[in-house]
Length: 310
Image 1 (cartoon, rainbow, N blue to C red):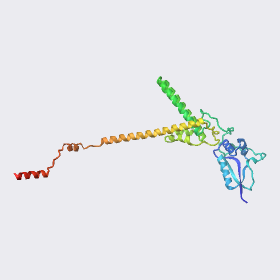
Image 2 (image 1 turned 180 degrees about the vertical axis):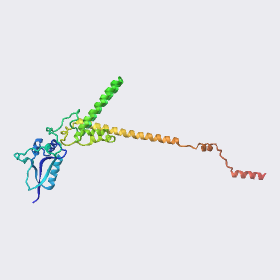
Image 3 (image 1 turned 90 degrees about the vertical axis):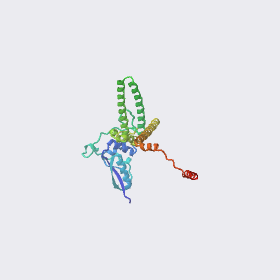
Image 4 (image 1 turned 30 degrees about the vertical axis):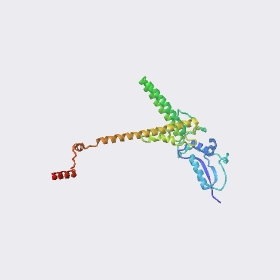
């Protein structure tokens, strides 16, 4: 008879995983609502899956670990049982409270159940936005900033104080909104908004915005909330336009750099040619030297013969 195994779970969380995050992940794993997995966190041993081969048991255990909980594999006789067959009238034990265990990591209070998708809030550091919406919002922010900058220039022509004050307020507002949408983009990838400080680090800050635009978001809920709503056609169009603008700006920068290098090389070559020494004395000597006319031997012979005849 082939050996079979079962997966047993007692409500243990992996290190650094919040209880609410684990509940949401398990609900997505078992394709049920969040309240349906609360029975797993009573502190009692619960058999989640039975009659598994060793390889299948390892895969189920890896799926639980990815969801943020700890389980174990135990051998058993071949029996079929699913999560829905867990007895509701099982002997109740005191609920396991991780905060009372001296070996448990710190936990935060259990939050309310999150909706299927999150609410969009532009002027907030809470929530999540995907890559396309981040690009679309960035394009809109840059467009508004350009209009405000043109307004500041117009005010500066009238009053330096008013123009400078308006420009300062506009710059601060631009930075604040940039931080807010950047924080939501990092939250979507499951990262802390404090990573925005990497933009201030030399070298790293030059390519970190590219990372923010490229890193994918979490497929389901994470510790920062539920996934963002689906992208609308308008968001997709704005995102593509922003990518086109970025590519054109990159190409223009590269072409400008190549032209600067070419001008510098030409200037250096011209200066080097002008610094080369010339042999003026030799050229003057060659110009003033008179050429010698060779004597034709035939003409000399004819003259001597003429003299002899005389």
